[in-house]
Length: 285
Image 1 (cartoon, one colour):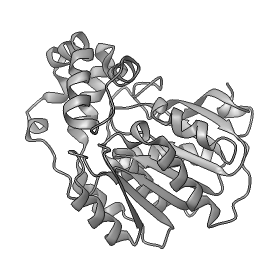
Image 2 (tube, rainbow, N blue to C red):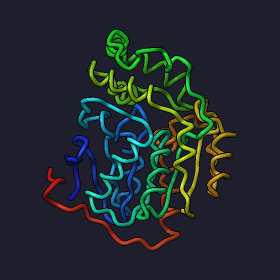
Image 3 (spheres, rainbow, N blue to C red):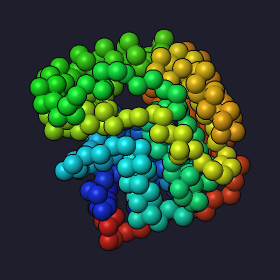
């Protein structure tokens, strides 16, 4: 069954998109993004994979937790439950930015993960902005209200100054998609909580303790996750590395064809069974 679906987990409801035919490919978006980050990549891969792209809890159209916690252990636990409920017995995981950290945690926890593509990944050495340590930030409704009111100019500034590379413009579709993360005050508060809970050094304890075929790729103009750090991560986990010319941090948007090519390369190195998401029960539409 292809389309957008609702999945009830023990911690809340996930919305996920599923399309295509073939082995399971789980696509995990970044900290403040949503499932649409993978639209262009998914279009290139749906003839080869069953592409499953969830909105992480509290992001996109998924439910807002009553008392949100977004430490890496929380994020990994929730997505691991999603994998189990959807009966993915073998899968490739592609993750972007913080989603790549979650992908690494899944590979450590779930033997079903047979391959990884880590795009512009968070690393254990990524810098955490000092502003995130401001006391009480996660409950700052005044900050959330400002984020909501000025979400589009804020998003444009971040995309053009900190995210995109040299030859990708922050068009209206991209601005609308990223600014949707804080279009409502409650979702803006959830995003603040996710940012406050983001502690890249936690990834050290979640690196896979087994050999998993992995490709790490990042833009050479990435200001958020510098090449030297992503290369260091690739060396640490024994992964292949791809440097993407003229790209910044948003490689799934900037060079979706290269991300799709990396996924196909990982997939062709192994024989994985075709996957069909089960109907009924917790995965009913």
